[in-house]
Image: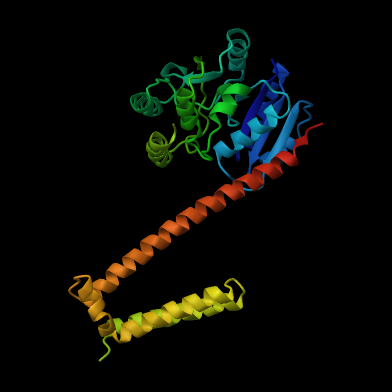
Length: 223
Length: 112
């Protein structure tokens, strides 16, 4: 099975090089999608000499959802059978890639979802927020996923074609889960470690409210 | 007699005519668009100066005061314009996203 790693990148010059160097040992093709960074992240990526690394550049910031879609389109257009999405901020532990690869290759799931748990470094407030989101999605859409917004996840080509999302921003992870449930694809959750480096980045309470409004919209529109 | 509120409304209408002409001269509006805006704001000025022109219209719709009718009309106009602007913005966002993503995919760079 040909597996690509897709990394959306936006202003992460402090962490991106370390992340890319750490995943180099897995010899997987890596697609970095820069989403209009203005802090020199692109130059940092370009300075790396890695044969299996491809850089795609959004000239303006479109949002995480659009960056993931661009990366997945590129990977599946270049013989990938599956992609693993991973954040560029060093939040995800590269050693967890092994778990995704094993589940994809041996158990033949359509999607593998990383799940951050309280004991794995998730702050209490975020943990509670995640659980509320999980219960809400479970109530509205009839499926329970323990960590709705974890960005560390994998999709096969079949799954990507069925759940291709429309969200361009932070709502993408939630929309993926909802479409996954609607399309009756087989998915599996695995525990992943989390390292929070920066408290001002990631999903804020305002983003969460925006996602909640989108969830209502998806309830009415996704069949 | 023209009251203060009418003067403010007339000044606003004239300033909107000025901006419409300005955008026309910058070629941001075409002939049909500038004509439509000029007709609309001219009609607004006439109604502001002679609100009694709408009296029979207001009575037809059982609206007690002409001022109320103008406020209702204004709300309808603003809501429809906001709705139209929202749809156009969404459409533009989608086109922009497609363009930027397409460019990124066609100009993929492999690190060597």
